[in-house]
Amino acid sequence: MAHHPRVNKISENSDNLICIHMALLPILCYPDSRLRTVARPVLAVDARIDQLVSDMLETMYEAKGIGLAATQVDVHERVIVIDVSEERDQPLVLINPELVWHSEEKHLNEEGCLSVPGIYDGVQRYDAVRVQALGRDGAMQTIEATALLAVCIQHEMDHLLGRVFVEYLSPLKRNRIQTKLRKAQREDAR
Ligand code: NI
Image: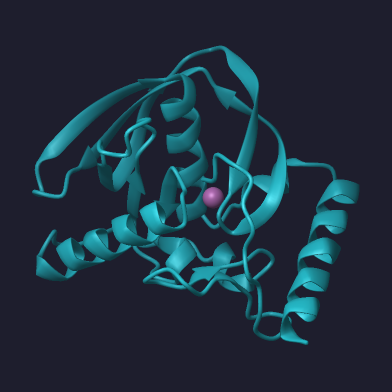
């Protein structure tokens, strides 16, 4: 999830879109069809997953994002990294996250996404959530989240189900966003 407006480079052909090349792992750009892939559970939190987590954290920090799902770097396993702290020093790693509780209340929050550069719009999310997930050490953890962290967790968990936040917007807005991102990609290719 992106928090602040930023400039991204977009290129590649029409259904093979990369938002950010500079980061360690290239980030897929909406409407790349790979973003619709449903991620499978991680079977073992091993050295390979630890390396993936390291690479995803480095990529997220470099891209100045506050959250990144493995789906966005074309790895279709249930891994999320998040850091909503001001100091960018409180990484949260969620492996195989499951939503075990949510508040009744939903609120409209402005969201952005590293896979949808320059676009910010309102999405309804639960005010509070409780999530169980494995940590980087493979131990089960329970996370109680409110405010920005709750929004970010819901946004990233959607990625693992192949859902990008713009899919909650009206078809008109969605089409406009697709047109804009494809145009930006064409201009970048020139
Ligand atoms: Ni996102």
